[in-house]
Length: 254
Image 1 (tube, rainbow, N blue to C red):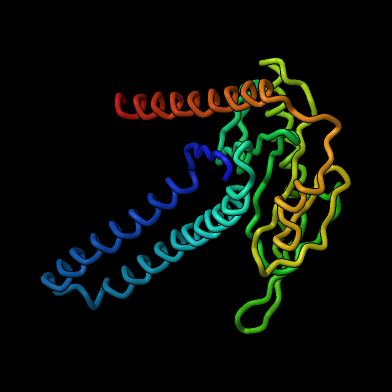
Image 2: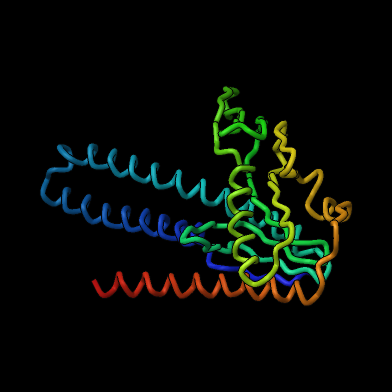
């Protein structure tokens, strides 16, 4: 089993915050409804206020569902890469900082066959798109049988940006070789009709593990280089922890 390092995951933190907001919203509303009843104004303001609360809860709840869907996708992908050989190292949710810009990555895998940066997507339905398209399109079917299209930013372009920053981070410590980026659709209910010439687009039918078994690098990464790479990425994780603490300190001192 591969070694796994999990960094700070803002998606999980945001989800907890949204759930807490919904709980506080309804708990506060309970006392407001009791006060309205005591003041005999429930019939005037009660239904309007209830509608407002339901609207707000629905809006925040949608964000929770989107986040939970993303977290489920990350967990699916993580289960696959965890089963790599023990000489591989997996980093989850690393925020890369390079040239005063940041990239929130999903998975970085380091091993003798190379360095791989994986963007995880948990979309279902049919995915269409071309390498140069700014947006790909997700075609979904509703529970009532209706169909709709949901455009989203081309993930291969997103991967190229992440790879550029990871390459910059590793070049600073002396590693200047090829980094393979890829997009991994992990939802079992997805059909991918999109492709890219440079960035492999994988699904559960052709998982990362099977891709790695077939992958032939131009040269293998030495153990010394792997240690250099993993140390550099762990430093990025520690730097992110420091930035988070500094931000919290600034908020508390205002």
